[in-house]
Length: 620
Image (cartoon, rainbow, N blue to C red; front, top):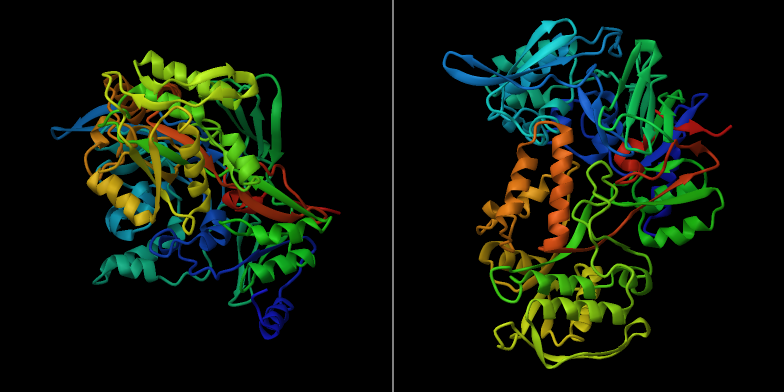
């Protein structure tokens, strides 16, 4: 274990000064938060540690995504925005949309939340230029889209947009900006605007008691020891219930605010799969600051903390140690990303759809992830991971699913024959179910010419042993059909340069981390992205798919976007420009004898939903 006795003693002595209330949710973090200034915390000082203890907890937005299914829903808003309406101002075409705001919500100082806070927030982002604020702010107020926001009444605002936006800029961008309190920030903003460098001044503002609208607010901070949040006495969300239905419907209700809202497509009906009610159910949350994961795991084992915040999850070496403690529960969740294999579709045979389908059929994800990698990774086969439930299409085709090795060889062979491929020595299938077959040799193109030897670029074991392992198994499997593939294990920068800069490759293996809104369906596969430097490095080009991808990108409502996201996934499953292979889970641990969560299965893990601080309950 990498720590000295002196370091451990220091951590424990400092922890002794932590206040303990009647009901305290004790957690562990590894880094200090850096600021209480939300503009800095979401800008140049954006860190995951800040999000866990400050802006991820204190602030609300007009709309958000309800975990664990991530359905898009009102948060501070009272209903969905009105449809975009085209207007003309001084010869300029703009688009407007009205957003109603919930009544009865208060800030942590008791001040009512109104349209003034919303207008002030967006006005500030425009005055300071969200791009210059850095970090996340640019996506919340893109200057090419957002013109201004006006107050229509105390509880209604109107957005003016320079162009008709798609979901990425609108529902998943502008409408999800954290809203700040005008009362607190207006004097700070006015002072900053008078300074020589307004942006620098705003980001440097020293906020000692930040505004909060959620269930928790700032308590105190002893640097190097702990950070504390306490219950917001004016929270309006305590008692708010979220219901998730098996048919995909979602319903919100808050008796305190006399507020109800539900999805219309689908309308909630039938079985309720999850229902939980907001708290907080604790008096305060303590974030003990430990030097490393070793010290935090020891604290968890000793019962000093109930949960460890860690965006990367538990290191594998700690899992066995924690599993030995009957009071510790280890949970495993998918991440929103994937690692994949792709082709240069500007070249033969990769330009032939059936060839790509045959390769996909030969790959046994389950075997590699479960038998070879011993569960370190999990199989994945779709460009939208199942964990992103609202956008995931569960009905797309998975090539080779449930087949034996022999059946895979037989099915791949039939696909190649369908496209006109032949062999110098054709494979012989004796009993596919029993894996009895003779491999083929010398695959020939439909024009009769031999398929020339080609290579797959894949990360070396030192960078990613999982992808290296997959690559070597793929090389072995395709050899059964006489496909002359050779794996070249190399460094990441070489692959990236060959694929994205030079576009000089045959096949390659890389990975992506994704956003909740699946605009990557457009970015990774639309023909406009196929030039050097674009995301469509493989050069996939299908005019019919382009129309679907464009419709997804330009869709201005969720129902339409979801329809085209599903259709795009069907296209890509059939066309196979990518073969999605696997991803690695995030592993977390908590004390099941101390805390109870409304759910533990969620994309990105509990850390992605800030440790469920507003809904966790302490065990009695």
